[in-house]
Length: 308
Length: 239
Image 1 (cartoon, helix red, strand yellow):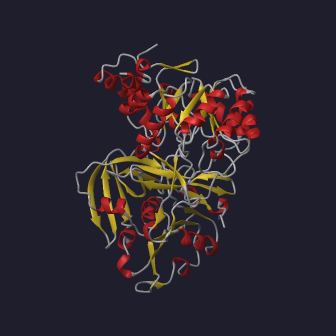
Image 2 (cartoon, helix red, strand yellow):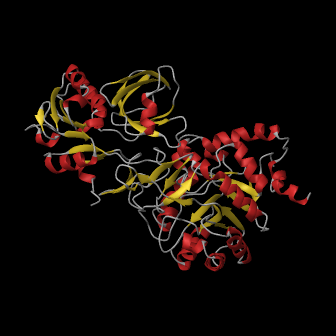
Image 3 (tube, chains in turn purple, brown):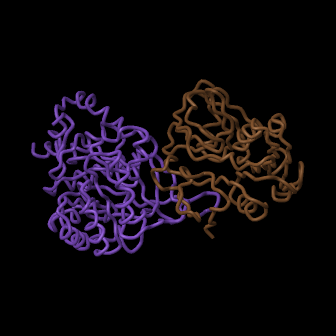
């Protein structure tokens, strides 16, 4: 166990840095740039029961200190992910991988998770009940504690692997959704998915995104993400994976102090393909600055002041 | 990379030369992706010319990012991802290829013309602009030994109309880059086969985010990775 290692639902990560789903493909695009085995793990592209092209383009718009996306879960479908993507992934990544799953019905989630449960390299199932870019599914499960709990129970029934629910920030009370997931048997939570946003083109007076709205990510959302991780980690007893605008080693430390057991990095990968490697390389020196011996010691450390 | 030159060619169009490692470029039609101070997303710009340790790009000032680029001075450093996209395949050119460029779709045609001329091909460059004052690189194409035809939408120079109004009678194959309405018109009008380069809003520019996907006859493709150049036969217009 090194200074950077952490435990996530019973699996040891060499470090807490995890590229977030949708920003890292199935890994091999990045494996051409650096050895991705330096990562804690990564969460692969959101996978659904059936293949999806996703939303019409434009799917990307810029924002101050961030970006909007309305990709809409483009993926080849779970069967092809298993037959084509995972064998390629296995060649460049030897650690357990986080399988990100989305669906349009409780049955969809269970179907996809049951198939991925059989894959040896899948360490965790990250169940996305928070995609803001699809209708009739995705986020609608994550905005209702009862619906989220239903998804958790259906998925837990088909897998022995740790199930991590990925939550949306587009709710009034994220803690109630988090508690409902925990009560239904979730092994962990990850948050936040993107914040619903929009841009208009001044020339055409129409939305820039063909899907009208999209999810905001990047440094702009970091304080919102940190606040929600702080609230959720303070209320649940299962591990929380923090994400939202993380782009430096200092951000990782801040997220962990807020209560994150591990940290996902999303949009930063898209502007710098080496972002995660740099963050991992920077962590020891950043820890030294604040007298941190082991990262696992500081998880939730930002709550200690409340008791004084 | 370091900015070596940055000068206007017309009122809105600039040429920038960047010095640094360009070994990742393998074909004309590829692009680079620039990180600008204070802008979150990179700016993808197609390659216009390539030296041993330099790359030239031509860009039009259309928004805040490109306005920021226009103000850059020689000596300034830029974080650049190079060698992105597939680029044009020269193998199909035949003996007398036609290169069709419109506006800021003209620049990638320059390096393509240079490479094809080096192979001894009789290159015809058909360049379209809105008006005479927006024309650039006519002389540069002539200096390569290309036959050059200019079309202007308002008729202020060369052939009046669009590039499709000035298509030559015979050519072996065509290569095209320009705004989407032009690509559609060329696709419909130009005879024979060709390769067309597409532009889309991108997130990453290197295949990770699925932001610039399009449907083709041969499956889903990412404009930044399996594109920006598509073969005419594989294009599936979305409407």
